[in-house]
Length: 245
Image (cartoon, rainbow, N blue to C red; front, side):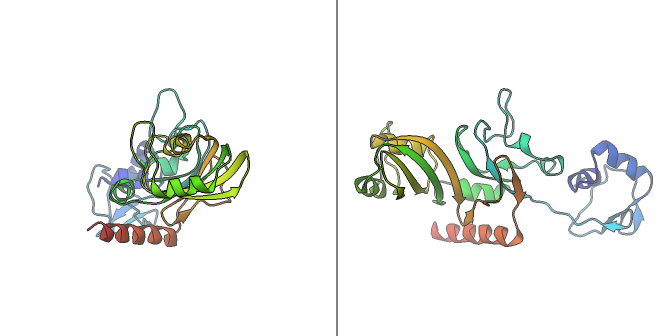
C-alpha cells in the first residue's frame, strides 16, 4: 500500500496535506524518515510513526447506520442523497459500501463496510442471513397470515418466498408487526403483505444477522461497530458458511 494512502485513510489529512507532512521528514518507516508518499509499505510488518506517534493500521471499517427515508443505499447517485453522503470525511476515506439495499422510503439498519469478503457472505442468497423489520400495516394482520408467511407466500411475479416469521405486536385495522426474513427480494416485505391483501404504511429494519440497531442512533446517525459486535458478525459468518457446506 502507498504510504500517502495509508496515512490519509488513517485520518492524518488529505493526500495533499499528507504530502506536505512527508516533506518535513516527520514520517518514519522502521525508524527511517520517508518523504516520498508513493513508497509502498507493508503496514502489518513495518512500523510507521508520524510526529513520534505510532500509526495503527486498520484495513477494514464496519459502520452501523440508522438510514432515514429519502436516502438510497448506494455509493453514489446523481439525483438522490446516498448513505455515503451521510459519512464524515474520516470514515468516507475507507470507501465503505452498503451491504445489501434498503428501499429509499424504508428507514433503519444499514451496515456499511469495505470488507468485501464479509459483505459477500452476508449478501449471498445461500447464507440465509436473517433480517428483522417492524412495520405499520393497513389491514388486520391475522393468525392466517402468520401461517402463510411461515409457509412462504407467492409474490406478484410468481416467486414463492422462503419462510418468514411474522409476529403481531398490535392487532387491528392498522396493525403493528415484526417480520423476520432470510432473503432480500426487491420490495419484498411490501410485496409479501400485498400478497395477503394488506399494505405496508411504514417500514423499518431493526436487525441484520446477530446485530440489533442501536436505539441511541437517531435517523441519519451512525457509529462504528464495537470489537464485540464485529466478532459476533464474523462468528455468525463462519456458522453460515459451515451451514452451507
